[in-house]
Amino acid sequence: MPLFLPDFNLKNYNTLGVSASARFYVSVTNEQELREALQFAAQENLPLLILGGGSNIVLSDNFPGLALHMRIQGKTLVSENDEYVWLQVAAGENWHSLVEYSLKYHYWGLENLSLIPGSVGAAPIQNIGAYGVELKDVFEELSAVDIRSGLSVTFIKDSCAFGYRDSVFKNQLKDQYIITSVTFKLNKIPQPNLTYPVLAERFAHRSINEINPQEISQMVCDIRQQKLPDPAQIPNVGSFFKNPVVARNEGARLQQLFPDLAVYPVDESHVKLAAGWLIERAGWRGYSENGTGVHAQQALVLTNPGGADGKAILALAQKIQDSVAKKYGIDLEPEPRIYP
Image 1 (cartoon, rainbow, N blue to C red):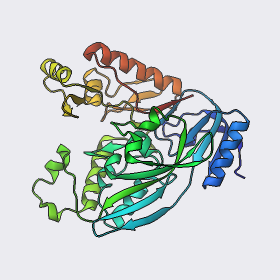
Image 2 (cartoon, one colour):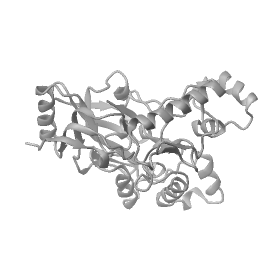
Image 3 (cartoon, rainbow, N blue to C red):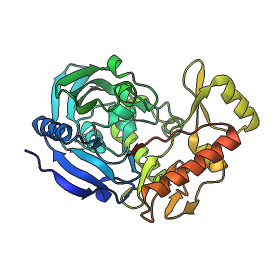
């Protein structure tokens, strides 16, 4: 039986460093403990807050339910052939540790996703992505537990409805399943993805055959560390807002008004705008108030150096949203999930 701790402060369990308590906290290390925790929550009629690395949540107040910390560990080589390897990874594993594991064995596919904070179980929900690669590009399937029934279910890629920072678990199946493991399909044969401009530029004078995944990973880490603050040093949740996706004609209209606006193609009818550019040009980069702030190197990152509460962080976010909407007619959508 897992241990249920009452009135548990989650300050050290969210990367914004917000001091807020959960009515109960439990850490689970296997599926049996997970099912027992779900039974407890059902019996006590408690809402759930599923914790991984705590890097994608904003605690706006004390949480009146059960904070369920997924700490199931393990990696299993499911199968392999001459070209691919299928690796099943437990939800509680740290994401960047998984990337480092894949590099150790010279598997390709995760190197562009280096240094993204959080856990493996949270990655499909968000369809995490960076530097030209998204989780869906290396995804095979996942296992999850139905919160109501406690039954295990397998989801293949098509069932997950992956989109830009999106999946079925944020929409139709929101709060219905807890992911317990993810199976990745990784390349044994070199497959460098250098479509992102900064990577293409830095490797422009190198032959594809000379590049290894460790180099790409290190380059991504260097870039991220230059642009993004370490949550252990400056509390933050990484990118606070999604890059807005708009119709191509709207993107073209905005580029006419703002010629240096960063615009990226999404599909035949949509483009993606750089939210950081919009926020910076609206005058917010380096701004601070009430213990919160906007990072001086990357306007997309809201920080909490003063240990403010969640309400103060959300108040700053709302001011930024209002400002960008007024200046550009673009509605910014927060990326982290807000509790309660």
